[in-house]
Image (cartoon, rainbow, N blue to C red; front, side, top):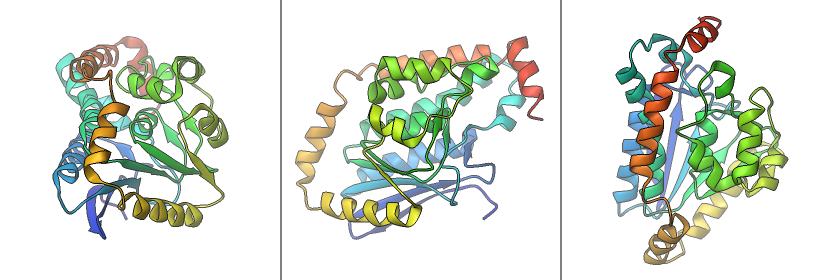
Length: 250
């Protein structure tokens, strides 16, 4: 696998969305746009009762924002558009009327933590350590912050946001509420995810839809809130501090 992609596979009423990028499943703008669109379409597809969100490959779940794209941002509007990509994915997940199961096989950084946090039920392997690294490059987890805080709580979110150089292990993430289960390996994870998704397909879709609304109560302002956060990140990525930091990733 070398070319980036987003795919949707529908089988036995389960819609499996998979994204991939050769740079550790990082998320450039075009992949973010495809991901948001695919999630929305899966939510509208009557053949799908439950969604599994996963990434390709065996190692990193998601490395977050594409550094190649961050380096290329030279004006605030471009920065806003790029970070709005994460906002659009989170909002698509929030509005989706179906439960989204997260399948996290490996390390997750920055925006990837936000994506995992926006799933409704997230299962992982013991290798799925998480890190919010944004402050290291002078930005901050502004766009994904609300999703992470909603799942982990303000205390845990602020801890990993401030300690931006440390990976927190999968058990820590489970203890804080991000992961529901942690398994020894990917094979076991996939087996359990498939089993759980099949069980969810036995639920009343209307009940799921109503429960989803309840679970996400209080986030109705996120279209505007995350857009505002994207503006902040879009400006900060142009700072001299961040430009200097990003030079190290060229």
